Structures are given as C-alpha cells and as structure tokens.
Picture 1 (cartoon, one colour):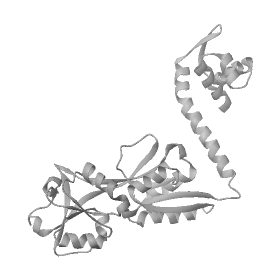
Picture 2 (tube, one colour; picture 1 turned 60 degrees about the vertical axis):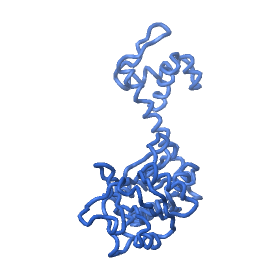
Picture 3 (cartoon, one colour; picture 1 turned 90 degrees about the vertical axis):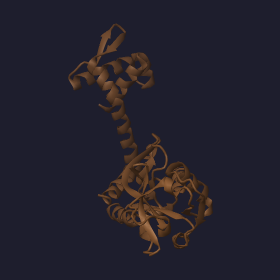
Picture 4 (tube, helix red, strand yellow; picture 1 turned 30 degrees about the vertical axis):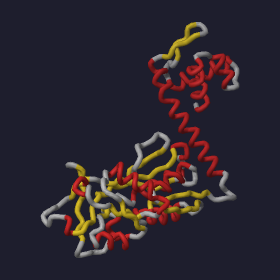
Length: 296
C-alpha cells in the first residue's frame, strides 16, 4: 500500500495521471490500476472519474490530506531503520548538552539510564550557557539540548517542556523591609544586578536580563557564585537565582532570598529539551523520553 499511496498523492498533486506516471517512473495504465487497487483495499472510492479528468470524493480529500503526513513519517522510519542497520562498524554517537547552571542530577541520571538501555550507542556530553547550546544546535554540533526558553518557539526546532523554576532575589537585608514576602522587579531599579558569567557570554546575558527579565539598573560581573554572594553581602547589588541555582548559595545571615514578581505575576524560568525538527530520530527521541521521566 505504501507505493499506492505515493502514486495517489502524485496523481492528485499533478492533477493528471500521465504526469504522475512520469514522476513515479511507471506507465499510465499501471498507475491507474494501482489507484483502483488502493480504492479496493480501502473499500471506498477516492476519485470521481470523468473521461481523462477527475475530482476527489469526500473520502479522497480526507485521504489526500492525511496520507501525506503518514507518508513522510514512513519515509523517516525507513531512513532511521537503514541508518541503524548500517551502524555495524561505527556506533551511533548522540551529542547531548545541558545548561551549565541547571545542575546535573536529572541529566546525568538520564545519561546513565540511556547508556544502560542502548549500549550500542555512545554519548558525547557538553555543558554551556544558553547561547552556546543554541548555537551548537544551530550548527549541527549538538543533537539535543536541555536549555531554558529565551526565544519564541520556532518550527525549526522540536521543543518539549521539562520543568519550571521560580525566580528569586538574593539581596542584603538592609534594602528590604523585614515584613516583605516578595520583591517586584521595579523595586530594584536603583540597584545593580550581579551576573555570574564569563566575559564571552556577558553581552548575551545582559540582553536577557535587561530585555526579558526587565532589569533596569547597572550590571556587576563576576565568574563565581562565591564572589557574587560576597558582593551581595557587602550591599553592592542583588543576585537573581531560581529554585535550582539558589542551591549553590550557602546560608548567609546578612542576606534574604525572596520570590521575584513582575506586577502581579510570579516570574519563572522554563526549561525545555530542544532538537532540530529535521534531525529527529530514534536515539534522540529515546533520550528525551528517558530525560522527561527524571522530572516526573
């Protein structure tokens, strides 16, 4: 039936049996017979014939609409099967990356399980900033990445939600009323925001904090959380963390950690698994399925 579906799609697309036959490298009588056999197999008429022309029946319109997606999926299945079958000499290598400040618990649990379940495949692991992972995916140097969501979703990528984490502010107590239970982003406009980032990624991080999170004040840059906490303790600025990254911060009697709001909305950071839509395959989707279960 696979070839018959291909012939049917070609006939409808070309609106002509002869042109479809040429496209499919088959004779016109043969392709006509294949369409009749397809109709017999389905038990319903797809084409209403009138001389050399035809129109689609209601069933034909439905079959044409959805058979194209099915055909695409079958072709992907065939390619993936052939790829796996041809990997007898060299093992498949899955290039996976994770956001550096996300933490490794769930990701490395997935790596361990994947390695146990698919011993014929190898894993190449990379960690990095949001922008580093994004560009590695874009340049086909990563197959799948655990990253936060900073861009509008694109049809170019498959993006699957994994987890969300609330933003919080670490700040010297002298700047916050003891009765406060939350902080509004606008309340921090006159204070500096401390960023933990290396110099090569500074511009991208400043853009994210300024344009996405709404930071209004200046930035202070450091490359370690220990230095950032010291700066916050000295009252030089505040540090934005979330439920995950705050685990890297030890208790400090001079500091307070409060939920961050923008108006009446609690600010959150969302984490997704990303991979290119045209690079979706058996091992990539299997790794995602395992990774997803680590968050359930």
